[in-house]
Image (cartoon, rainbow, N blue to C red; front, side, top):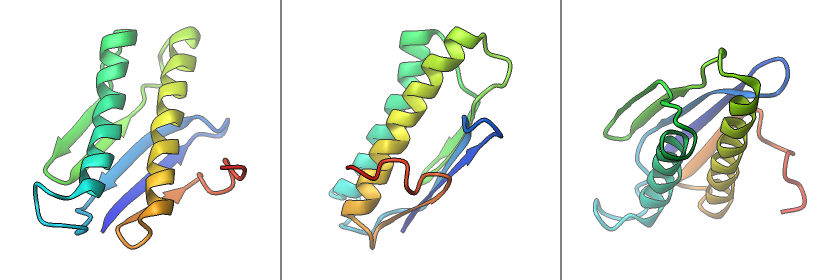
Length: 116
């Protein structure tokens, strides 16, 4: 089971994203659920670096990712990082809805995208 945890600050901005575990949907190398979660989170980190020139503090190893959003980013950059974060969390939420027995998501995400 992959466990995703989203932590927000008092204004609703994402401040931390934690992902831990393996989906167990299929054997290693064939697991599309693990591949989806990996693609979403790696794209987030790489997009912040490549598009915004922001290197997010991240700790990662096999089946684990812990990412913090710096609080001292300039406002214009922070808004763009938040959009990328929300996009990633939205993708993780959709994956968790589709593969309920393999991905759980917790924190302040439920109800944000009721129309999807």
